[in-house]
Image (cartoon, rainbow, N blue to C red; front, top):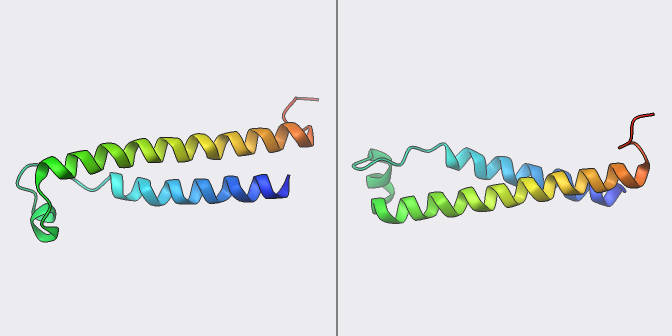
Length: 78
């Protein structure tokens, strides 16, 4: 159970890190995209893939905690 909690915590932490990058604005002619020299089409593709990875990480985060709680018996109300 401890390992599941630890893995779930790490999945959540990595998901939060990815979420921080999802809030970067990607608009046509964005100054940020010009600074890092990424075309708009590539930036939208990166944004979509990062969103998918983030959702997978948060799903794994939740699954690890639910499985851990069900093993410990704290998932069901008493």
